[in-house]
Image (tube, rainbow, N blue to C red; front, side, top):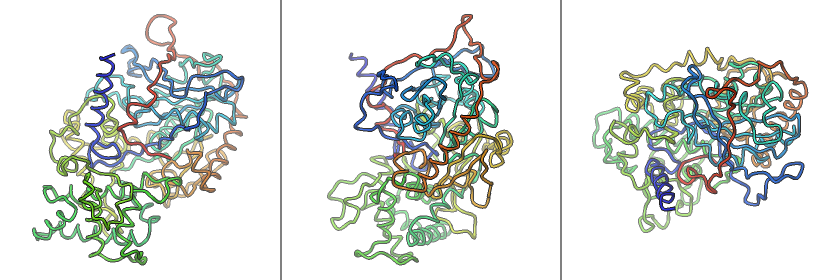
Length: 583
């Protein structure tokens, strides 16, 4: 018992030590991964019961699958890949709904994504299917190698992840009636994903035609983009106009001062945000992106008391009066933004008596960027000895994701080109983030990496995807919109074979049933998706063995990878300390 307690304590300590920011990032100048919002468990959830009255394991029951370490060299053997499963709505002949949350520890996602609190469960309920959440390789506890060193991460590629989905679908024995008879040649499989895993849905269906009967890609970032300055464009277009105007004015001023030689003015700006001791000006200016990154956490269900809107209120509400559309102007906005970081407690935890009693922020729920960590440690990016760069232990989703960023997709969130309105500094350009790739993976990148954007988009089609039976769902207010098939100016036609529907939501809002209850445009997207699924699955026919049948597994002759249950903690370990959006 003592050893178990010590193990849990050590895991929690490791998570807490790694997560510097309130949203779980290990560094305050590291952009947020795309991320699938986590849907919290229904507090009134009773036992899970099948349609024939059988009481099933709780949603958070963990199973293990013997996944190939390297699909290019099966002789290396297998590793344990975690998954969660329910056949709550299943009836013989029904589909299998498969989802990976992507770049996150998947523990804690089953409660939402196996139930009808999400589109996954809605599809399963309508089509009499079972549902699966599969942890992505090199995230959480599903690791082919027990560390995240550069040499190990050579097995962390887009293609290996795609091959994982194929091998799982063809070989898993699901813990349900006839669970060994539902491979993709015998039963229709539906691949669901959001954000990166939404892109993975598209890329998999391009790369493995015919494997999945249908796909649903929410906010799928299908196009790899190196300098993804457009990340901030939906936010600029949809945030309060006065707040946008003042943010742009402050950022333009900071860029001008920091590009000059007036050291007094430079220091005054640093001090204004509580960053007076920081060394590098691009780190200081880049840190202010945190307020704009908070937009990604918004959902239609968020309500008004969010960190992002507290930030805008701090800039735009003066003596109880809201600013006009043009804002209050530079002088007020600069001071108010600084106060939000210092007196308002956004930068660090502050004792109550340090906060001005007249502050409108005192009753707000404000995310603390740096907690109790110094600004230089939290926001400085020039020390290659920081644990942020050197920690190679598993269950570090930011490190695993950054490997994908540095090698395959980019998505670097920088200032807009000159002449275009910008919410964030232009002092941060791709070289800033690519230097961090070198610091984090020095063995792999002795020089700044050349991210293989062209290779990714060529192989997996990116914006040029034109396939059958995939439903693309996107949100007008999603910061990742311009990497999706609904990017501004792209104008890809929606067809019955490849429908494209856009609601008024944020990032992956259409995955959540709760979002559809408060936003009729999201409800319309979900209804259209369910209709497409019904049409496509009604037309599905079993195929000849070999197109979706079992593949020989490494090991003793005739062995088949099995799903093995193991009770998960009531509260997922990572959920206590790692950031995940809510819906």
